[in-house]
Length: 86
Image 1 (cartoon, one colour):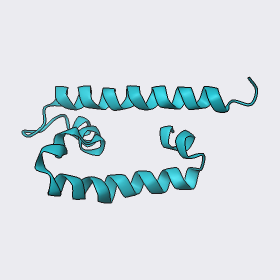
Image 2 (cartoon, rainbow, N blue to C red):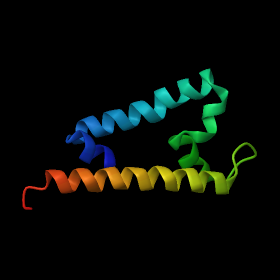
Image 3 (cartoon, rainbow, N blue to C red):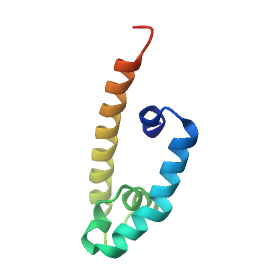
């Protein structure tokens, strides 16, 4: 939803989301080892697994909440600025 509001196109939002999650995030975590525990896809999937030996469940919850808060704030600001009824 955040990407859809940001890009104004459902196709673009789906393409960017899939591209990031399947390709770019894996390349980043393979090239720079320390980035793996800060990437959104890794943390969201770790929440679904209930934590792992590498990344704790609490860390994943905190990082994911941060991503969701920042994304929601950006989406709210963009929605307010682009709203035609206002």
